[in-house]
Image (cartoon, rainbow, N blue to C red; front, side, top):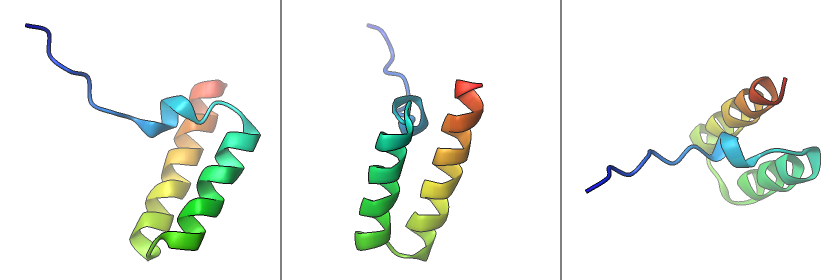
Length: 50
């Protein structure tokens, strides 16, 4: 049986509109740790895009 790949949200944050909505939702519902992680994910997504 094949192993499942770990989910990495940064792979799906492939345009600015999606990144903006993701951050807006985390700011609305998240705590400081979730906000920090969201910013890391967005930075990683932007690095992957380059």
